[in-house]
Length: 301
Image (cartoon, rainbow, N blue to C red; front, top):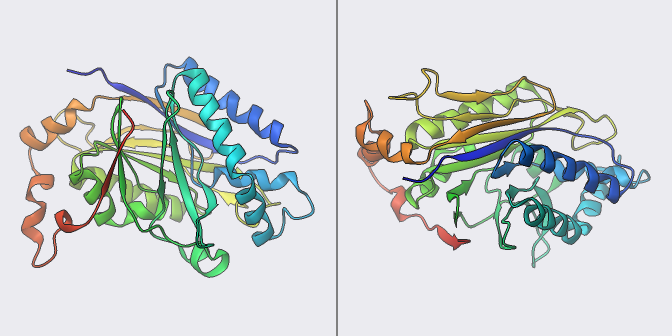
């Protein structure tokens, strides 16, 4: 039997750093705080890196200029998160950031940094209307599951978790925890993502961890309003809470939500639960099956 994994999900307050060094210090303090609480896996929110656009006051209020500014900082962002993972001996899902791929498309990239220096990324698959219509962010084309010393991890960024087949495909490939970094500009948006996260936990009988941005940033056309609460969700069955909510933060408050995930419970839920939705899923199909969809296993262990 393996020990539980202590997971810290950030309710990350969007700030207005005046330099890259100031942002580095802020993120380092967040990581240090989580490490002091014994966290092994840290989850930062979607588009948390966009606060770096504040560094250049001349372009911070320009949507597309701010995007390009953060894209240009990508290698430095990666280096800082990788250094923190090594320094504190933790696995970190960094705040997602816009990333330019080889053909010039911009994607929304979530990167996982391990303390041994390895890393892997998952690009968001489903674009919201803002990303499609205003920002011209493109969807990723490949699903991944990360085999790590802490366990098998999937990433479903924000809107992704509202679509069942993404997490289902990751769960079939072995993910026992799906990480959901999110960024929503209304409470309705937050609850859409949270409801999606709880639904994915229910139907796949896994852990789903949501980490949102919080706070107001009127200077930013991308992050002007941020609502949400970090939480860990499980299927409401057996030894789980009646509502499936293992932990939940106070909405809008900058803080870590830290709790333990005993990944051995996944197998117990699936074999001994009152219901067996993960096993019974194929019975609903009249055509294509999730098992037919491609997913890549990325070895990080």
